[in-house]
Structure formats: structure tokens, C-alpha cells
Image (cartoon, rainbow, N blue to C red; front, side, top):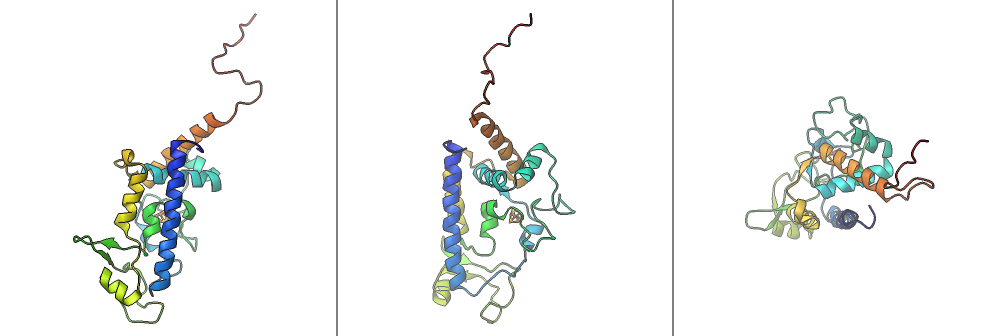
Length: 221
Ligand code: SF4
């Protein structure tokens, strides 16, 4: 996929994911809120709808780090680690302490859970802790499960988390032509893997002595 326009888009998305991590790290340092270790509750009944570029990113990641699983997904033989694979994300593993089995390649929304705010109708930043966050902040303070305005966040924590709507718009801007093609993760990634495998096949140099595709086969004598 290197050198292709899709490759360029995946690289662009990779840079954006890096920026999200940096912004979230700053928010985590500034605020007292942390997801509980090994929570994963937000993935149990949830399968994200993703854009083609997000699917391509996960496809490339799986082909690099979990090739057998990727091929199984593309050929319809993938087995989800969960006993109820139709229920939520097929990559969620209830038996794994970290739960997400494709963490490095996960989609945008999966990166935003817990540590991202949004904008209200007035366009101002706001943030509400996830309903699964521990009721006590990591500084031992009282429950704060309510919505905070941007001004309050700045006053109390001196920081505002990255904002979901802004980040979603940036992902859409990587490949605006296909921004209407959101599909459930499992379908979109299976197609993206098939596409990546096809591109891999046609970008590899042919084996020595392989006839060129337009060379007629010799006639039998
Ligand atoms: S890809 Fe990972 S983080 Fe995203 S919904 Fe599935 S299990 Fe959760």
C-alpha cells in the first residue's frame, strides 16, 4: 500500500492518532479521572461504524501484527474470542485483561472513549465523565459525574480534553469523497483486508520464470 493514495491516507490517519494520544495524555495528567483498569464495558454491546480510511488502518495493522486473523476475517473463517460474537464488537475478548484484541489498530471512536469531550449546541467545549468511570477521582475526591463546561474545566483542571467533533471532522477530511460510507467495523475491515491483500498481490514482483499475463501458453504438439 506504500506509495498509493490509500497508503498516504493511512499514514495521515496514523499521524492524527498520534496527536490524539498526545492530547489525551495531557488531559489525563491534568484531570483526576481515569478509566478503571481492565474496564472495557464500553465495548461489550458496541460495534463501531467506521469510515473506509479507519477500516484500511485496522486492516494494515492486522496484516502486520495478526496476519492469520486478518486472512480469516477476509475469508469468512474468523472466530471472535467472545461466546456471543453477534452482540458487540467481534474483537472484544472478555477473557483478556485488556479486552481489545486489536488495540493498536482500533478505530477513532475506540480511541476517544473516556478521554474526549464534545461541543454543545453553542459550539462551546464541554465534557461529561463516562458513566462507567469510578465514582471517585484518582485524587480521592467526591463523585463528579456531571457535565462540565469548557470554562469550568479550565478553571478546575487548567485543561480541556480533545473534542470528538473536531477529531471526527479531521478524519473525514482525510478522505472526504468516501465520508458517506460508514459501515459496521467487521464488514468494513473484512473488505479492507481483501482490498489490501489484492494490492499486495499486484505490487509484489513476479516470481522468476512466471510468464507475463499476456504471454500465450505454448501450443501442445
Ligand atoms: S475495536 Fe477494540 S476498542 Fe473498539 S469496540 Fe472493538 S474491542 Fe472495543
